[in-house]
Image 1: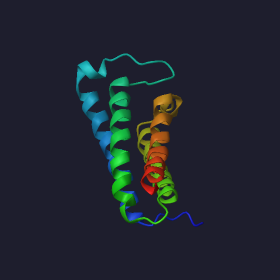
Image 2: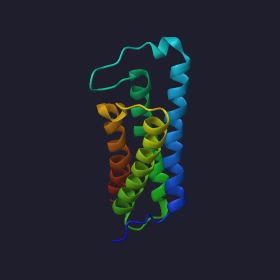
Image 3: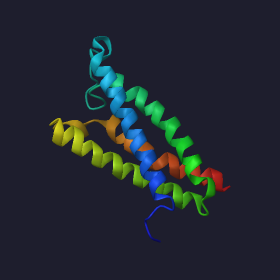
Length: 134
């Protein structure tokens, strides 16, 4: 089974769009002192005002993006997993480049909320594929 998703450009576009939404929401939170002042939750989230809404939003958006992406797929569970892995790889690459390298955030990956978001990016499209196949 080759890894390549059947609609590569769409998978990359959706993955990039999810990352941009998270980045823009983070910028909005940093610009608003009341949201930026929310205390961190040790080991869970450094910025809960960013991560909690994004987790909910990613659950919803990744499901609807996966449904749209899998509309014409033959083996939907496999293609959903390929889509999810593509979105995950793209998001982790962009996170490393922007947050770790550019912003020098050494503890970015130390929080559960980040890894939960990555799990959502992989799991929800696969689950959407499973349910749409039946």
